[in-house]
Image 1 (tube, rainbow, N blue to C red):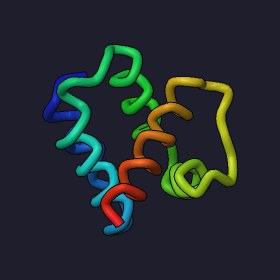
Image 2 (tube, one colour; image 1 turned 45 degrees about the vertical axis):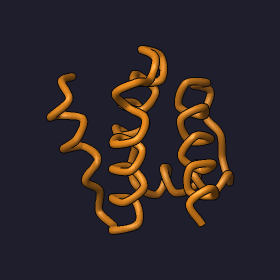
Image 3 (tube, one colour; image 1 turned 30 degrees about the vertical axis):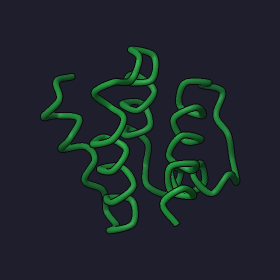
Image 4 (cartoon, rainbow, N blue to C red; image 1 turned 90 degrees about the horizontal axis):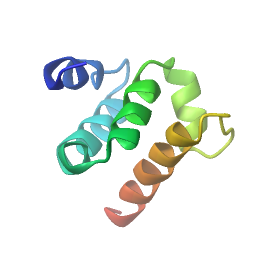
Length: 81
């Protein structure tokens, strides 16, 4: 998936997720490892309620790369508060 497609998928159904996904993309995606990039793309393929639950640490997935990205986004938002 090219960068334009990833950026487009960062647009979600709610402003909160839009901000989190776009911020992660802008700050970390370009320098992320291939595993992290793939994890982010997998995260973006999930439905918004599942992403919310991941980011609120209510659930974790069997996919370690997706969980790692959720942790990074969670930590990113904590640092900016």
